[in-house]
Image (cartoon, rainbow, N blue to C red):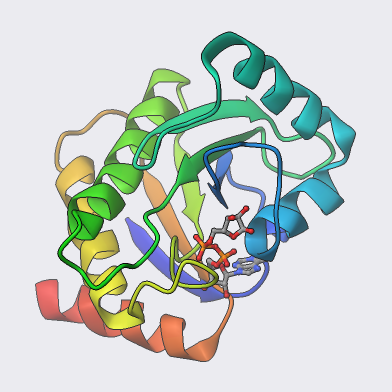
Length: 172
Ligand code: AR6
């Protein structure tokens, strides 16, 4: 099942919430800043351990940590592409963010996963195209029946909420 809500992902009590991080995994602005602020220092500590082991996270890939003080059980940090005109593999990488995050969530026996609109803030991805990619990737993964029952798109702004709803309706 896919749900779309407008709000703040740090308040969502899904098994896992996804963070739109950067390759350093060491925090930033936007949703990344909000997650680290509300979740407390445990999340950054876990990220530092991952950095020490594997040196950050590549664009399109994902890693998992504790959710610290957040109501979720885990945070999956994925790195969306920076929009660079659309001919630099942005679409494939954005699609990979959703698939790799869901794959990691399934490996950790999560049933519900909440996503922000990855790359549509500081990274400048056009929101309409990003919404179509997000919905396509999630539907593709849900069809594989890996134990994930619920995916929630947590849209921070009304524009993204409308665009994701439209993208989902177009696929029904
Ligand atoms: N809950 C849900 N969505 C949010 C929240 C929130 N609390 N806060 C912002 N958004 P962005 P990006 C929305 O910029 O474009 C960071 O510095 C926001 O409105 O957070 O992938 C990282 O460290 C937008 O729709 O992420 C990276 O350096 C969406 O989340 C860089 O930004 C994504 O916006 C990543 O840029």
